[in-house]
Image 1 (cartoon, rainbow, N blue to C red):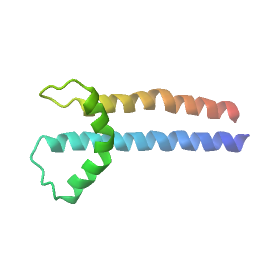
Image 2: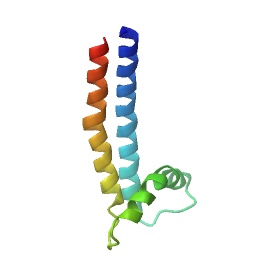
Image 3: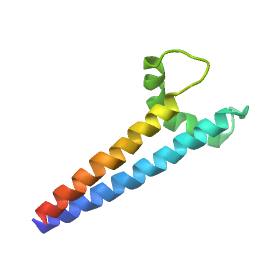
Length: 97
């Protein structure tokens, strides 16, 4: 069973790294949106392609105001997953090992 525990630890760590990286991508996207970015820039296109599928549904559910709070909501959701799901996976892994 220790192999399953080690696998679960690896999954929890990988999930934590992926969530951290995605949070930074969203932060960069929000910062870039404050200026007038070139829409043909490959970095801007990458940021839009990666973040828009997550931000668009959140944006539709939020009340329309002058500010876009969808990045804040998504970042809070990512932080919740990092504080709740990752430790739960780690504890489950240690119980298996």
